[in-house]
Image (cartoon, one colour):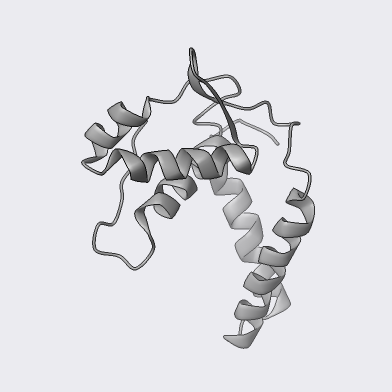
Length: 129
């Protein structure tokens, strides 16, 4: 799993890591049931504190993206097992992003084009949603 973090950026490292893993799951680079590196191994690979990785994994678990088993480690959850409040939370975030786009002068057509491009770029070629 190739992850790059911005060590000098304003966004906390645990959120960058969480977002990178969600992107990998959403783009199907990480598949259902696929194991993630151990906290210790990923921390070492990325050159960050194990507590940072643990915090990202805990957030991913709480949000229903992964499951953690002491014996088998962290694994990607089946897509249908969404967090119970996911649709509302996702709509709130998307509404805010759309409002930011409108506030910055983007129109409906531009926002829809961006959405379409992002959807097409997210999945590997030949993969459908």
